Image 1: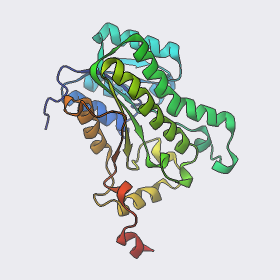
Image 2: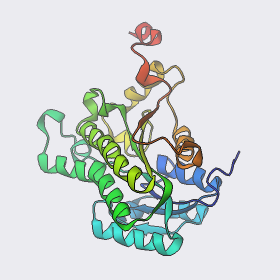
Image 3: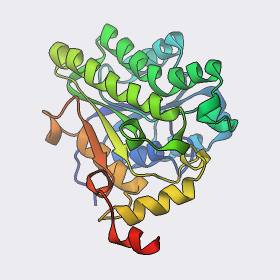
Length: 267
């Protein structure tokens, strides 16, 4: 069911790759709620994924951009400004760790790869906001979101250096959220999602066990990609205009549970 929550709003969604991507689900939901979109991802991701199908489905321009490149971001926002003028919402759904992909353990990190993890998974979020801020491209009461995971707050050994990247991402949301709020009443938040079987998520060692553990620990079960998309739409809408600088858990209650009887029984 559509409620028209985003009727007349315009936004940019970073990171959709295929139908398993949370960003893909967000784009579909935002479009259904009346939003106009621009879709973007790194050029290599556009070649590997199915994002062109999503662009056709939603009628969205597809603009290749490396979110770690200020030049690419400016070109992307040139397109957005020409298409929409100012925009109302942005989703940052970007994360990649070379250490994870190449099986490098946390206790023996390649530090050049660690810097790349930070740049892609966290610093890119600051770059996106900085370019938007300096170009004054966000409408008042706009909403900027990034996706994160509870490993930013607690030790999840197999999450590797992505844990530090997500912690930095959340810090950027708080710090930039203050400045964006003061300047233009723009709100900045992160959504801490349950483990979700996306292309990126399933690359983490032991992901299937994390998924099972999350399901057993969460009173409502793991939040799905569709659940996250609904939450994002709510956060893009005018119904959440005073929510900013928050890390918001969409995890079926996982973050508030100490231990679940079902897990004890399984042990």
